[in-house]
Image 1: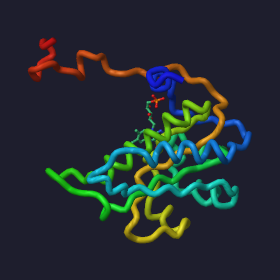
Image 2 (image 1 turned 90 degrees about the horizontal axis):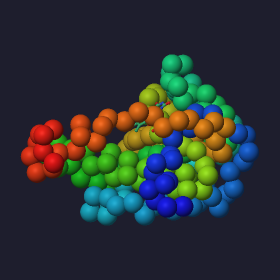
Image 3 (image 1 turned 120 degrees about the vertical axis):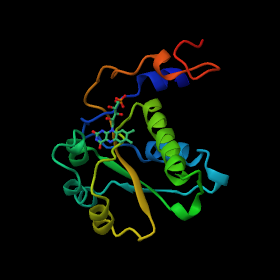
Length: 178
Ligand SMILES: Cc1cc2nc3c(=O)[nH]c(=O)nc-3n(C[C@H](O)[C@H](O)[C@H](O)COP(=O)(O)O)c2cc1C
């Protein structure tokens, strides 16, 4: 699939079929994440892949009932907990780059999944302390995001985006610039 088509067609998927995801597809999306760029190429990211239903069930209570993706956490056949070791990245101008490093890898994963016909949903609204405890993650590891992974059981329309001219400025910081 063409990369632009993949980007244009990706959606946050919050409803999944219970069809299992083939192991080689799980590996391929994680390989795509592994190839992401990072601060000094330190590759601070770590991925905890949960396929075991009992392990996946541990996550559910970490999500607020108002989180629109909570149902997907309870139903998708695979959950990937996207983590980072902040010590394996840098801080510059007050920006903690472990978040950027891991977010890039996360988006590689999401786009690769889209390319394989699989759905994902970046989720950032959860109780990290609770999750680290139930999953027995080491203290120094941060959870940067979580995604369900599976075959979509919905086909959402493209969600709205700001207009090009609202967010892109050529040469001068001005909406008038072209
Ligand atoms: C950092 C981040 C955190 C997010 N957290 C959640 C979340 O906790 N629950 C959820 O349902 N969606 C979450 N989303 C998905 C966004 O709501 C979604 O990307 C946005 O509405 C645009 O929709 P689209 O991804 O289909 O284009 C998150 C996305 C990002 C990038």
